[in-house]
Amino acid sequence: MRRVIAIAAAGLSLAGCSSFSTPDYLTLDYYRSKPPTALVQLESTPPGAEARTSVGPGCKTPCSVSIIPPEGSFTVSYTMPGREPATVPVQVIREAGGVFAADTIKVSPNPVIAELRVPAPPPRAKPMRPKKRKQPADAAAAPADAAPPPQR
Image (cartoon, rainbow, N blue to C red; front, side):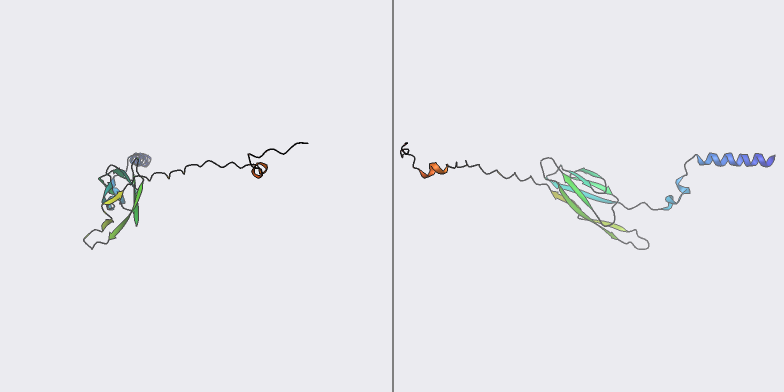
């Protein structure tokens, strides 16, 4: 009987533990370092454009965003009402650290600057010229002031 009670108590205690979330210090995620971030400055000419990175964050220029840079490169897209949109490619450069130093990440170019231009006006339509009316072949052969042929 004692064994049955001990097994039941152990089963209930284990079932109760499963309902709580596991603390970070008991998982391997606690020992992993957080991915490094990079601060990217975003500017535009004229200021006040909406800038958005392809990795997520965005803001209204001039501003800066903190991103977790991807491998290789990403882009920054700028939009502003009444201006043509612009996209600027950005390279991510990773430099390996030493034994006691962390890896460093550089973003080039930094600051990322875009010039938003006013769209070119649409091409003007050529003025229409009136079409020349073609005269019938009979009227073109006979002069206008000539008398009509006599009738029989």
